[in-house]
Image (tube, one colour):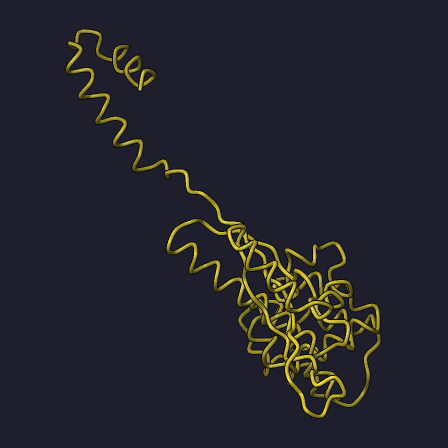
Length: 238
């Protein structure tokens, strides 16, 4: 407030103190309209675990249950300890870390982003025994598996990896997964979709050819060409 009052005094030195106070208050009110208030951020983690469930067919009477994902904030440490204890050796650890504003909208965003992270991890596990970490290692080794998702990598990350056959094979599986494609960012989805469609046709492409196809697909996406039309134009002579 003192800085504002000094500024007002410099502009209108003839104002009496009450007038200066009133004008300063008006200026502060205007400033607050353009300067957002400080919002606390909530840190959270998504953990991946399973619990033992009763199974009469198992020798011990129990078998590992379905994989589960759950979101925890720092205030949930006791609940997280309980999950670790109940899960025991079936606890698979943290798969995602993030933060969101401590507001109603922010907490909704937290829930949605955490749920999306869990879905991406679970879908990747269904496509590869090595799971989501393997996808990131193949397509974007520079990323952090605890804070980055393969569904968010850029088409340039995908294109750069295509010189290696494991990446080409994994891209084809990615493109055939409706679940993972729905979670993937739009431009990357287009490129991966084009690669998957081409992989179903006769004539296997090598690394250079696949890379060039992906680059043309990205250009077609920028031009607004439907992926179906792009593939038709690419394979009319195949």
